[in-house]
Image (tube, rainbow, N blue to C red; front, side):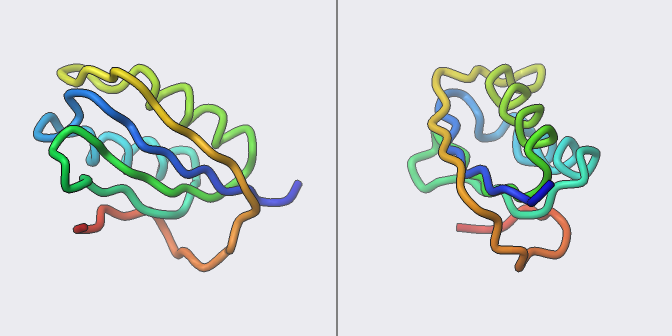
Length: 94
């Protein structure tokens, strides 16, 4: 299978509740690479993940629910071809 890319914007109460740390842990568990960060609007988290389609499907399902303490109002997702430029999965600053 070839690697794919998932780009997502998660809206709701997702900043200040450990959402990025939770995404990083889940992405690492799923053997995905990429990054997650807070957007400037204080209500959105953005992420880019690359890996196998099944793992990306699972991450997409997880971010739709979010961790305990978060409230996900909506998720915008797009898929594409992986670039393969990422080494691991991290939290970045905007």
